[in-house]
Length: 458
Image 1 (tube, rainbow, N blue to C red):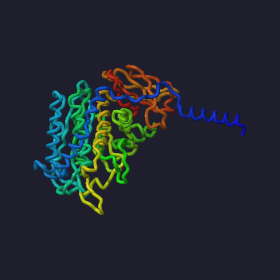
Image 2 (cartoon, rainbow, N blue to C red):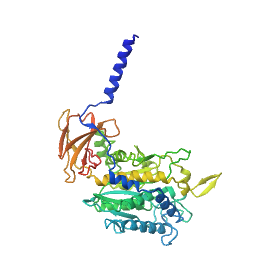
Image 3 (cartoon, rainbow, N blue to C red):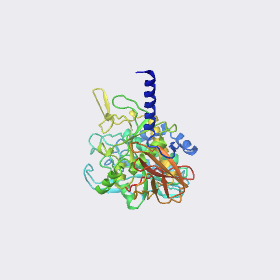
Image 4 (cartoon, one colour):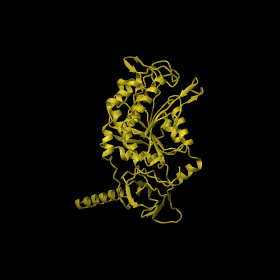
């Protein structure tokens, strides 16, 4: 082939690849992730790996935290752990100037009758510190870990059950964030929770989520931390700068009719859960957290479940964080040595620096959610006429200073473009709804931006 022909073909190939990468063409600018502001950056600098270690070490010191273990012994059992967590949370609340409270009346204990893995009548208690929002207190975001632990037999409430990684690490995230954020003023309300009964069937989180639902609470995001304390897998792989985040696509609460409607418009990847996940990836993968959030497009309930399921079941968007490479010799195991291999969920297998980075991921996401306006409501996309434009309409939020339309090609995982549209409730974008997915996010006067709403009711 003549060299000129080769150059021509190369030029055509470059042009083809460039056109493909820019398709569909549309308005706006490339979306740039919002960065933590100075206040948030300073808060995240206060998260202390040594305090993470101290929390996990103290939880392990109670011997067992099995849900059915002793609730009155001051030194051993889940009751002693509950009381210590409550005391710590109360000490954090004391620095808040009255904004943070730790009260059983918000998520009270209850008595669970024997059922399944609960083999005797058992008190289920959650410890929750609530930092009330200053201007939008009815909008709520939750971060949690479960403080109960287990060994191989989930009904064994007598043997030592350290529960360092599963889930002392998640409790440490919630407690450390409560400590750091207690003396700051938040726009919306944040709840820092340590729940019980996870290992026997999500009893504590189910009770918490149902209580909030029965109170018509507007929970717009729940972050569950379950097994986030180690960066080393069972094959020796170390991965200290990535964290998995499970974000379910189709909510379990949807009816068959709703699922059909979702499929009709290609919205399988656009539930409120996935929008929450996209938001977290955008705001929390940066130099402040020193972490990359890897969103897993799979419902974790098919693997091992978790407390986020309880919130999803009550119609709330929720995700689960879990370390990227697990060592199953250190989860749900009796403490023992077999052929020179140590089994058991012991403190020595935790990576407290990694755990602290996971706490920063949660902290950046939680604070960014709570300082922004709420996710826009009532968003619809006009499909009444055939047109190459796309008209979106939504409900006004007085707290929003303005709005942005975000869009992406239908095959893209994350929003790629943004179009500022001002303080309006209706706009027309010069891009066909057949070629792109659209969302709308609210922007606060402080610059914080909400997760995107998608034009589908779920």
